Length: 131
Image (cartoon, rainbow, N blue to C red; front, top):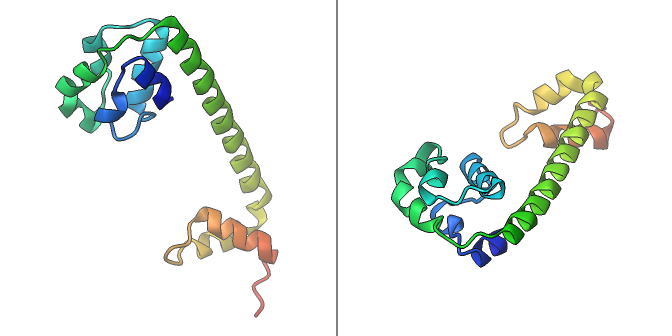
């Protein structure tokens, strides 16, 4: 993603700490859709990134062409597919661990233990709480 943007002389990564935030995604989607006006693209910034509008305008003033749009669309489609797959698998894990929901919630009260770690503990132990 970064290489394609850099090839188009779009320096979004130099202004935004991450390229695929909500703001970055909105700007990239607009570029793919054909928007080239750096002012219009910069106005898509949200949150703290809005404080950097001047820098964004300069960073988004590149030479973005159709082939860059095709490349980014393919990359975003892959990312979207992976995110959808992860969501599907996460939902399946929640479904399969539902019988141990109370135990998982109690494990999550341990400092440093999040839901995923608690689910792994249950999966590894079978939910057996005996010493």
